[in-house]
Image (tube, rainbow, N blue to C red; front, side):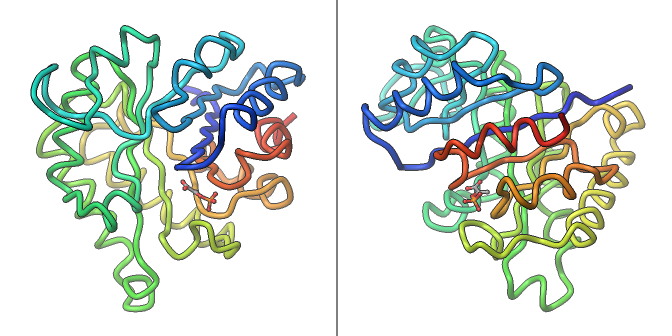
Length: 246
Ligand code: PEP
């Protein structure tokens, strides 16, 4: 089965009402490749602003979601609130949440289970630190993160995997096409252990300093099915990344 190319934009904790309106207007006016699924993730405060103003062909993601129904969970957002607001995706397990906010593999997996079982798609992130890469532990780390996910989910149809080496995020130091393809292939092989259909159908995105110049080569790799873009998703160049295969 052909996997639809997927480009996500992670605004992180950036933007203001006016700058986000400008990004929305830029996307609304752009001639975008219709063969690409596009999802943008603004900060929580601006989710509705984006959903209400962005063209309907682009979906919107939160940058986090909780693994419990509505209730006494101060500061969290629920899956039902996302769905009520027509927010159909969530980014989970981003390295900034794993490292700064200490979200464990199991917590990320639990949130992924709750979101996907209740109808929200998940861009599930994984990736190694520089120290782990230099110690030759990249595949081991990513496999550990994947095993924690497999321990809790059985339906992979709403999961998109984003491989994001931590050393490449926001550093300008992009993985080489060979480095990225090697890990993506290893993830695809790992997914075969779930089953062949999951391996064949699950999109695996690359994230880490993707820009309009490096996206073309990365996007040609057989196991790279799109990108999760941070910094460049705030710029007009995001359109060039979406259109990198046009
Ligand atoms: C990210 O935060 O998911 C990311 C990949 O950031 P950047 O593109 O800025 O490296």
